[in-house]
Image 1: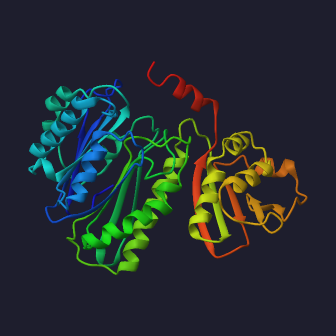
Image 2: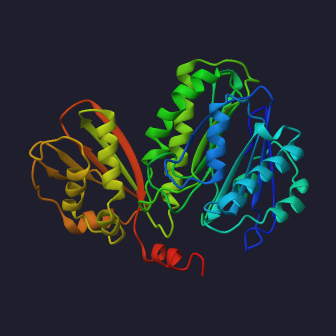
Image 3: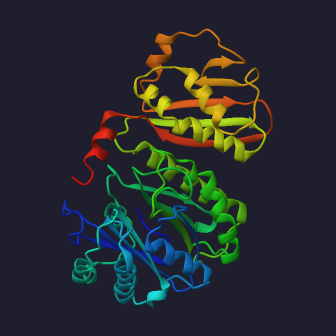
Length: 380
């Protein structure tokens, strides 16, 4: 996939990942690029997240991004802070930018010092091009596939996104690393005021295992080289790319075999609809039922009940794979036929709370034996 005008990217294998796969990636921004940023709410946030927040608060222009995968550089004390700064310095030298204009990101194992000497030895070898594929591959950890998406804009501008994420994913920020780039011209104030809402409606609606990572971030950068576009069209495209990436992340959850897509309408507010959708998508009982093709709607009802969304059980409707399974109470359906319908790559739950105009979506995945195995042996 090709980046919009004003951005160039590349990657290299520096030896951080034991597999020997690419693990160090760069993006160079046009000097005039504007940016917005949202980061994890985890109190044990990594140095890269703390530094990114400071850069955003300081109103600094952003000239580049560096990501290392395989090592989170988190819970590594003063050395971790120093290594993160050194990572910015090395990237700045390669990109021709100042260190304070480079955003850092790390992802991988927590509590292990970053082998900065490997980065020092290999970062100069990164070749920058207009292609995004090498970057998308290098930022992966337990992911099984790259995650990219794009949308056209009026006048030839584009929105292009890339993300990584497979485990330790749950709402409270962006739930992974996600980067969106556009060549449309958008004021910094508009980017920063509206980007968090997009994150809330998309990336924050992904849940794989209930754990919010220490290193999560979501970035939106605009070079402006293609000129202005209508605001409505721009944000519609941004949301479409973010939503697509969110679905890809959920579908690639660790050990997952199915995507769980939950849509809720009729809530008192959008916020309550999102909360209800997240509760269902994140229910371990429902995730296990989906894996076993068991249309046990009681687990959906339970999750809705503790979600915090207000509703009357005697009024709500639940559909599973487009089949009504609850309408103010139990309704007859063929369990065998519905179980067969659940043997699909995407299992859809549609809920109408019948109490307002609020609507929201959430995405998760089934709970498999593979998930337990991956996380039981993650560092051993």
